[in-house]
Length: 126
Image (cartoon, rainbow, N blue to C red; front, side, top):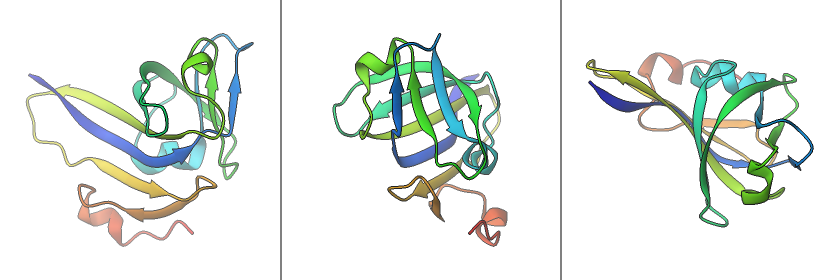
C-alpha cells in the first residue's frame, strides 16, 4: 500500500487567515466537489509564496464563494494573499487517476490539469 495523490487544487489564493478559528482550511464547496475532497478529510497545503507546508483538514465553504481560508494555527504559517496548492491523498494498492484542477486568482475553476480523469475534461463548470 502507498499514499497516492488523489486530489489537487493548483494555484489557489488564500482569501482569509483566521487565527481565532479552532483549526482547518475552509474551501469553496464547488472546488471540494470538483476534486473529490470530503469534509473532514486530511489535506496537505503547500505555499508557493512562502514555501510553508502543513497538514490540516477540510471544512466546506459556501458554494461559488471562492473561499480558501487558513484557520487557527495554520494562519501563522500561510497568510491571506498567498498562492497555495491543496492536495488530498489515498492509501491504496490500486492505480489512481488524480482529480487536478487549476484555479484563477479568485479561486474559480479554469481547467483540468493533465493528471485528471479524461471523463471530467468534458464537464463544464463555468
